[in-house]
Image 1 (cartoon, rainbow, N blue to C red):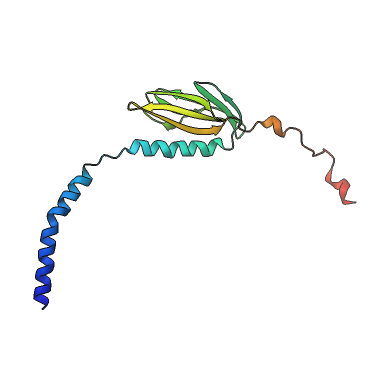
Image 2 (cartoon, one colour; image 1 turned 90 degrees about the vertical axis):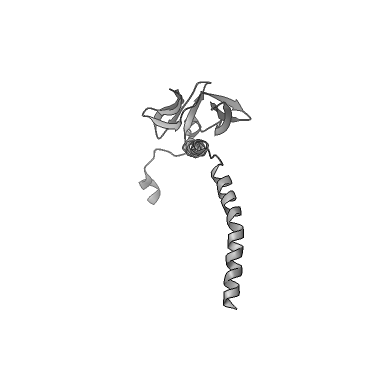
Length: 147
């Protein structure tokens, strides 16, 4: 009885082997664009940083803002989207890149390998530090209130 089960299992395995080989060959020929995944991750990291930036100034070629009390600018340099000062690369090997306003958001529009991508990176309004300058906190000492 065991011999019959083993023979049937072997026949089924031998019959399915060509199907498995065809499936394996088909799957290996599927191209996968890792650059597109890397771009999505980089844009996601840029969005996270832009959430807490303030004093946003927008133009078609450059986005400038303050982040942690320093002035930064985001622009295309040598076919890369760079955050300066310093050199933090967000997008690599782009053919063209510009910023645009649409529906209250600022988008980065870039072309790569003859495909155009449009990603939202920040709200157009952003945070302006002037909005926080009129605080109700007085300069009186805290010791006054302890009496």
